[in-house]
Image (cartoon, rainbow, N blue to C red; front, side, top):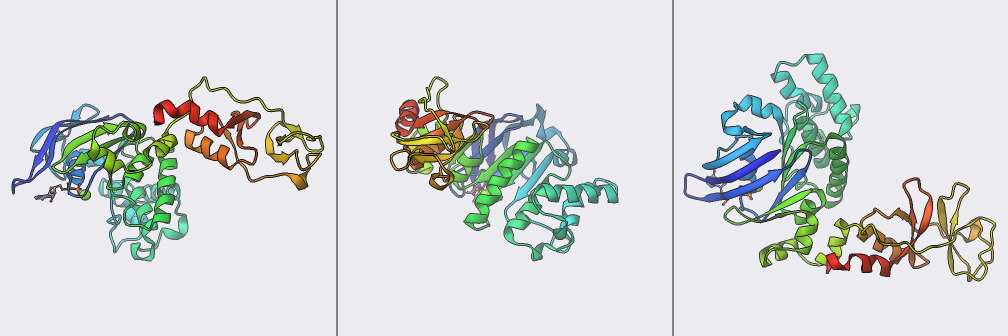
Length: 356
Ligand code: ADP
Ligand code: MG
């Protein structure tokens, strides 16, 4: 757990960068710190690993006051990822990752093996190990930056605009991979970004700062989208909030599926509309249009529609229902077995209380 209690930073020239900030980051969760340029995001982050000391207030890591912890102990526990990765240009990729463990007295062979494992974890195979940073793309450098931050296996991770310097497609890829990685490693993370979509996508909780380092709102992505506290937050969060909120919402447990009798290949669908076709293990393989064909066959199978579990986000369910040829989304259980359908109307009806 990382906790900020009334933390302020006033720079020597009188600039108040952070103003009485209170935050809590539960263990294993990711807090996204977001806001316009100059609102105090980087300052807030750097006070955690004491690159900057607060003017007043207290920051604790698992109850330990950072100001009473020596910097070496502190930095061992805190991985730090910055924009453009900040790699040592004259060291190879693997040496970049192994640098801190080596500095802390780690055995050469062991730290190298571990560095190679970490590179693998962030999606870089052995080919990259002996290259220099300039021989990598921006996205690859950023991955090395993440691997390096994880080198001492720190419980805490700080990330300052980690994905901002790469193009949008690579960026989305890095974000997806990072979500998967965090699912495995479960670090306690504070990530700074100026991109609200990135904050909403990656953050378990999001803190929106306004200029002057004042906390405007602190909540889950769904809360920010559905209940922005004021026009600053609403404007910052941006348009189509209701629709975007669906991406963070789940159907209430009581939402009933519409019963639907599936068929197997070779069975009759005569007189029916669109019908779900399942295989021998009751897993859906597509839809067949009973108004145009009599029998379900491979040739008449419409295979492109998706089948989703009911626990998918409301946005995926709605999208699936709208894109499905039968006007309803086929729902599967945890074993992939077809259990019924959901219409777009049902999805919208179930969530409209929240997303309105
Ligand atoms: P952000 O990361 O949100 O863009 P920063 O934390 O870098 O914001 O900066 C917050 C405010 O503090 C800005 O107004 C910035 O100009 C100011 N600032 C940052 N570093 C210093 C410094 N060393 N001395 C004086 N002012 C600073
Ligand atoms: Mg910054």
